[in-house]
Image (tube, rainbow, N blue to C red; front, side, top):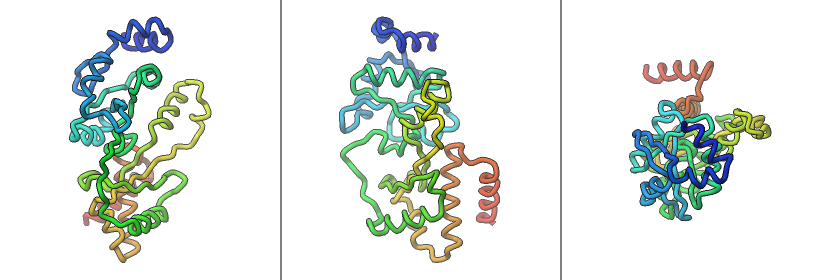
Length: 248
């Protein structure tokens, strides 16, 4: 029934106007809301600095578990959007409902998913951040990753992998035959978010042993990839061996 309602709202304007009153969104706690009910539900904590209501969502509860938990720790609500045409449905709602946006919980660090005027200070100076970024870029594949330095909570992960919401959504729609073959043919590219406030990122700068420094960067990058289910095959095998060596 959900698919038929969403398809009708996407394809027929008159049906959309009627269905807007009864179509429901489901959060990860199993609660259902109409669009208007959900807007009211999230407006206090999930309104960004531009007055947009930000609907956070997940499409795989297991793979995105750590990102979901981080969002919930901030008091945010998370929707489950794992249907076959949910990407198209979200695009349609964003176009028709004023100041209403969807962002997947792993599309960015949680503090930037719902932007605010407040910003955490960094424990690293600008010069240290520039130096650290250069060191990390020398030890990763820059064709796959863009390094971004972020001043976020020290309790967040030291490194995180994200993919911009727009690009990821377009690629997923192209994979479904959504007429966006240009996006589907583009290689995957991710943001490697470096938490400038985490103690481990600062330790990279202080490490004088080049081999240990490289291994630390590789280990933190692999952990970030693993949290996104992106570490597989030979890379996963190398990560396991390296982890055992570190423990030993």
